Structures are given as structure tokens and as C-alpha cells.
Length: 178
Picture 1: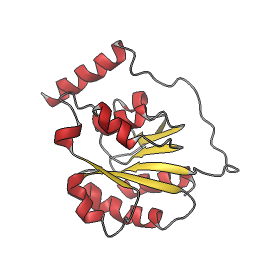
Picture 2: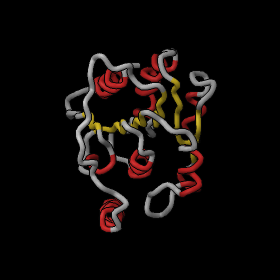
Picture 3: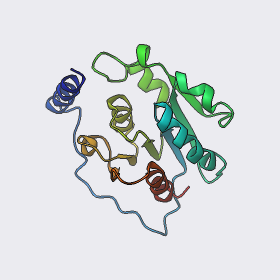
Picture 4: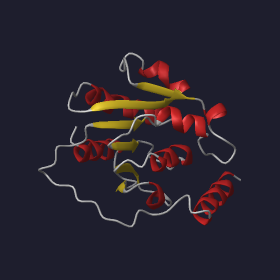
């Protein structure tokens, strides 16, 4: 049932033209300065968040960019010792609608600031965070490869089944220059 609801929602977004592939190419050069500010969406799930926690510790100590973090309420207690500020939380039950799309108030609250990059760290496709990434209109919208990633992200990190997720996170860090 979940899969059909996801397919129906994406089909509806495409038909109503609320979702389009970007259709333009990006160029990333060594001479670039990296991003000035970014929103990092922390993955849900115990195993995913444990792996991400070690990666995010190194990012948080980095002072090259103004980093903001978004995570589900249930994860905050595991990260509150790492992140002291720039953290926003959300509740799946109250801020995500039946179609698995973020509510308008939630989008306004999270995207009140313009970001150079929005990174969805979920290794598997999650419609609410993918749509939030797309809706941000950030120049760099980064996510992992999936069946629907081309609609939501303009930079897609290829994740092979045999690779560890840490490799994907390192690619993201290198890509953003942080």
C-alpha cells in the first residue's frame, strides 16, 4: 500500500507540474569556494542515524560553512550532545500529511533561510525529505540514487549495495567542500 501511495503522489506532483526534472547541468570545479551555508537532513532509523552521527561530528566542528540540521523529534536526544545550535526538529505525525508531503507551515519554518545546499542523508528514498529538498530551490540539492531521485535532486550520489554508506557521506563532504 505504501508503494502505491508513493507512486500516486509522485504521479500527481508530475501531472500538476509541481515536480519537474531540472534539465540543466551543473559544473563543480576545484577552484570553487564550497558552500557558505547548508541544510543537512539527518537520516531516520537507528542504524542510519548511528552511522551519520560519526560523520556529522566531523562536519559540525568544521567552521568553513554555516551548517543547519533537520531531524525527526525522536532522534534529537541522540544528537543533542553533538549539536548545540542550528537544529530544527519535526514530527512525522503532525508535520507530514497523508500523502507523505510536508505541510506548508513546516516548509516555511524549515526553509525560512535560503541555503546554498540542501543534503538529504537518507540512504533510501524518503518522500517528505526529498520533497523538502526539492522545494528549497537550493542551487545544490543532494541525495542518494533511487528510482525517483532525478525529480528531487540535482546531484545524485550513487550508492552501490556493496559500498558502505560512509563512502557516500564522504563524497557529499568532498562535493560541498566542507
